[in-house]
Length: 572
Image: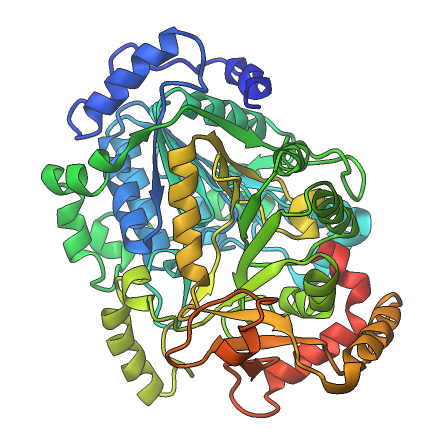
């Protein structure tokens, strides 16, 4: 399955491991040295060691350690880079790496990253070893006005709408990280309100060179624009009046990282927390879209969509998926029907956000509109993640610290709710044999518009570990399960017919859903929907569990978007 990805590893110019083995001063050194032997054999799918990185704090600690240990090069791709404590910490560490001689290159998607011309002017001039490019900036400006963005959209809506959703870091061509995390407090357990339940994969070995090859394609892409070439940034540089950050104190970390700063230098801790958990895998490939994704408004031949479809088509017994946004396109729904028809015993389970945990109300509204089809037509077993699951202390290790800060902010009127979790991991397991972890959501944007990346792994042990991790998130104490309502007198068939017919048009005003959220009764045993004991063991929790009241504004908007949002589904 993975052999067709190998040609990517030979793209670009500097994709071999450096002559001197990197990370000699790090606990990762022996693993990197062993991987360098696999590179000589010329097969980047083999000789790799992988580790799933789930906790946000650990994900940040690992990044800081690897930045400090890099000696030659670091490349970074991100969809979001926010000017907050975690964003400034990583930028500070990368600048310090540049100053000690490491070549640092960053590509950030322009649309939702920080848009500060003065900060960007500083970064563009702080050191020649640090280079930053921006993917598809509107009208060649760092901070376009609303009018300028509108003009750019009129000139090329595709150019504004098509984004780089990649998340990638490669260190010295030998170690890589990819997954769902951008660069912002919310991804690293450092937010007092929304925090993402996310996932990375750490890979040591020749597969990192495949990732580097993909980065090179984006670096030379015509719509990746250097900071100093942006009109408003150039004007700031020419004036020379912008703030310089001379010391670490200038970055204002808010006192967050005292312990992390020390732990990043603790070789014994890094070895125990990360290195010993690296495991060899049979085969792994880095898969990615090409820059631009497509030349038209939508791509029907996107590389990563083709490969993931091919992976799903191999399923015989089980598919387990985790996605923050569950918005299946017509081709995706057709695929699942075909899979079910070819394999009547195939079990498809999906972990996604609930109404109470989602960060994207429009996407959830599309999911809500299609939910009857998912359950009744496609026979998906859908579990929706709770905002404060029972496993929260384990999933969110900074929970207690953030709760204390949140309580003070709530008292001061600076925020409304206590910290909660929002699912952001994007993962797939097929037959406990093949696994994928990356940036790809189950929605039309990932399918057709945004460029995506990830690791496709053929290894039963890795696949089972990922399955178990997603399975924990789907347990009754951590998620609600979506199932058919127990509607009397067989009226569910009539209700489903009316709802199905109305959903075919651009306006869907039918208010009654055949499906709802269910929670496990105290002391009962978990069983799947369709089991004879399901309605004895579970009770209905309503369509929108976790709401502020019987008719919150969030619920009203969800119903409104469900009614009129069908035309927007292809771009959600």
